[in-house]
Structure formats: C-alpha cells, structure tokens
Image (cartoon, rainbow, N blue to C red; front, side, top):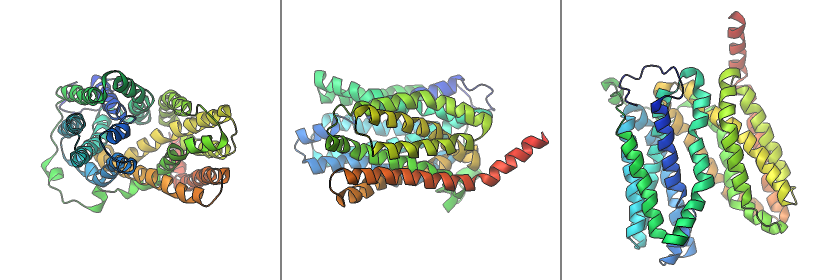
Length: 402
C-alpha cells in the first residue's frame, strides 16, 4: 500500500486501490448511519421541524459552497493529507452531535461535518485515479461508487437499530469511530509530494471549473435532478395513490445499482462511453414516464429497477469520462466540476417539483413532475449524442487504422 512513486498500475485490484475502496465505504457508512436519526434527534432536543430541516440541509449547502475549492486542493496538495483532515473534520462534527444539545453549536458541527465530507469525496477520487490503470478507469470508478450505494442501502437501518437499542449518542460515537478507522488506514499511504510549480501556480477559472468536463457534468446532473425529485416526492405520490410499503423502492434501487455499476464500467472501457450512456439515458427516461402512470407497488418497483439500470450504467461512465477528458493529473477539478453540477441539480429538482405539484390538484402534479424528469433525460440524450459524435468518429477512425 506504500507507493511513493505512483508508477502506472498494471492491475486494478492492487492494495492501494482496495484500501481506498475501504475508506470510501467507511465514510459512506459514517454519513448514512445518522441520516435517518438526525432530524428526530434535533426535534427531541428542542428544535422545530422547520429548523431541523434547515440544519439537515446545511450539510448539502456547505458541500456545494466548498466543492470548487476541493478540486483545486486535490490537484495541488497531498491527497493523503487532505483525506486525513477530511476524516478529522467529519469525526469532530459527529462527536459534536454526541456531546452537545446546543442548537447553535450543532449547526457549527454540521457545517464542519459537511466541509469534511466534501473534501473527502473529491480527494478520494483524485487519490484513487493514481491506482487505477488507464484502460480500466470506467471499471475502477464503477467499483469506487459501490461504497456509497451500499452505505445508502444498509447504513440507515443500522444507525436506526443502534439508536433504538442503545441511544442516539451511541450511534454518533460509532459513526465517528468509522472515521478514525479510515484515518488509520490512511497512515499506511505515502503519497508523492506535488511539484512546487503546481503548488504555487496561479489559480485560474479552469482550476475551479474545467470547461472540458462540463458536457459530461451537465448530462450527469440530470440523474441528480431525477434523484432529488424522487427522494422528495415519491412517498407523497404513493400516499396520493394509496400505495403502502413504498420504502422498499429505495432498497431495490440500491441493489440494482450495486449489481450494474461494475459491469457497466468494464463495458465502457472496452466499447466506449456512448454505448453505455445513451441507452442509460433512454432507459431512465422511460422509467420516469412509467412511474407517473404506475398504480401499484409492483409497477413502481419495476420502474425503479429500470431507472437504476440506466443510472447505474451511465453515471460512473460519465464520471470516468470527465477524468479521461480533463486528464488524471487534474482529476481533482474534474471531480469537483462533476459533483458541483450534481449538487445544484439535486437542489433544483425538489424546488421545481414543488412549484409544479403546487399548480395541480391531486395526482396530476406528480405525473407532470415525473414526465418532466423523463423529458430532461431525453434532452440530455440528444445533447450527449451530438457532443460526443465527433469524438466517436475519431475513435472509429483510429480503430480502423489499427
């Protein structure tokens, strides 16, 4: 796991890459373990429902604001050191929840936690790219996202179970301990120092947002738009339809995402990005049109399976495409640009959804929102088709010469 020179890796499953996957999973579990209990905890210590919502949402706002700086730091500073600091910040934030009931202090700790998580997400990918062979970038990025998928599916239930049996304070402490384990693993890494010319180079706009990554970011953000809309309004849609047991939808989606991501990455590495992303966008669009017209739990779950197939195939490929287009030496800004688009779209989806639903009575509002999601995906499909058409033609000509 100690690799000072960062020679080009031959195999994907090297010890450094496996360790980064482990760190990613630990951070994901640390985050998702408290997702289901934080609002309840805040209300229990005297916060109103609206204030609890604001405190929970501050995390995303903090990540959005800090994200542009994360790319610059990841490309210019030592990623191992950044990851260590990110785990320290996340751990401090979680410990703060455990040892104070002061609302102003909890807001501060929530912000600290958000800063740590934003830095960690970008730094993990920037560090991981150094241990992924160039010809396996799609597969490597696909596996890297599995920690978050597994965390979102399993960790909330674990956190809730611990809180119910041992108390919320214990959940926060266990969650914080996972960041300690991640920190210990990072102590076995010895990353090469950045060159002085890179560290002291003047910061330009392309060091914050790289235009080369924007086409991939715009397309990927449509999935975040859909995710934000579904997370905010699926339960209300099911209630309006009189459908019970809808929570299983998120578990089904997580399982499908877990299964599809590694295979889609391998296919991208062999056949190119278009063969993955274009069908992924189309399948997701169809699933959204179907969701608005579903009248039973089975039908909704089926649309979830197709949505996850499309998203699970396209998203990691788009992220790998960002890095390949911008270059691995600038993977930090490629990643921050990618995440910035997702952060914005994740917030815009629920806000626009609220406006649309408010304009209609009953089920029509939800159907129109989900139809809009489908239309957005189709627009993204057409956009990506033309944006990558020239690139696809060039690749075909190269293969023909070979």
